[in-house]
Image (cartoon, rainbow, N blue to C red; front, side, top):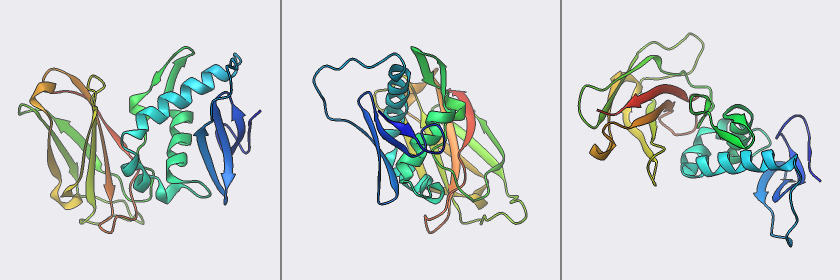
Length: 215
C-alpha cells in the first residue's frame, strides 16, 4: 500500500498498482514496480496508474530539457520527479478512463527567471512559427538580454512529436522564427516558450504560447 506524505503525489511512499514511490537520500523516486504475478489493480488504483502513465510517457520524450527546467524548483526531489508531480496535479484532464493531457497547463520548466513579456505568435510563412516578445523585465526579477530562448513545439499526430530549440535566440532578440517540417502544414501544434540563463543554471516558468495551425 502506498501513502502520500504532504499532499497528492508528494513524497509518495509505497506501492500503488505497479507504481512504487520511495525516498532515497532525501529524494522522492517514482518508478514502475517489477512484475508480480497477475495481481489485478483495484478500482481506486486504476485512475492513478493511468495518470502516471500519461504524464511520464509525455514528459519522457524531453527529459533532458526537464532536468534543467525543474532543477531549480525541486527541493528534496529530482528534477524529473518534481516535473512529474506538478503535471500529475495540474496537467491531466477528464474523468477516468477518459483522461488526457491538458496541454495549456503543462510545464516543462519552473524557475525564477522573468518570463517573456507580451509573448505572441504568428504564421506568416509556410512551415514556420514566428514568435515575438517585449524587452521588459519586471523589477526585482532576474532576467538578462543574454538569457537563451527555449521553444518546444508538440505535434500529437507525429511519432516523434517534439521539436526543441534552445539558444537559437536570446531575450534581447525580441523575436524568433521557429522552423517546423513542411509535412506539418494544416496540423495544429502546441507551442511552449521559456528562457534559460546564459550559464544554463536558472530557467523561467514555461509559458504556453498557444495552439497554432501550421501554414
